[in-house]
Length: 276
Image (cartoon, rainbow, N blue to C red; front, side):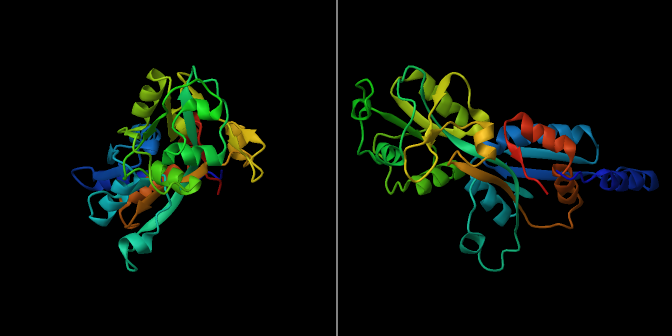
């Protein structure tokens, strides 16, 4: 990644502080994707350590809530794990900018005691549609499958159901508030299955191998290497939405996101930074 220094903007704030009785202070509000929340919380903390003119507040709620917060001027940066059609959602004159800041994967997880280690696209489509409802239909131990999902604001859910062509979710599906809750529910229920952002995977659950090509015969695990070489199918861009580039707080944070410091934070969560 090409290093772009954000020191000039911070120096601008410092210069302003020398010529005025008080330091100029800026507030930046972020809202949106639960899959991006932990990563951006750490980015916020790191950024705030490196300058004292911009403070950031961050809130989850799902990708759609971030875009709506931008629309309603309730946030300066929206976090989204799903590529919304901005003109369709906001109108032709929306003036909202979009930038992909990292790549991750959606990981399908099951309980550690589930012996099945791979699932085809068709199997996942039928599980989440309710056509397949017992693990013994897939060669596993008998038990009613419990699909764990997110709510309608989730970019992860929208990406998942569109990828697998799920038209209507199974009536047995249970809604979880965030990625951590999905992990907790699947790890405590031998019949559970869920999907989460890559950064939230833990050893308390088992990750499913998914088909790496159209033949549905080769299966790959969601590893960092398979994300980079394109073998894992559920790779996606994590993006931000913002409106006013003349806002010094937005400009400063966007420059920070292109720095080596931000790259290190992003990689520490197992994500792939965008290369300039």
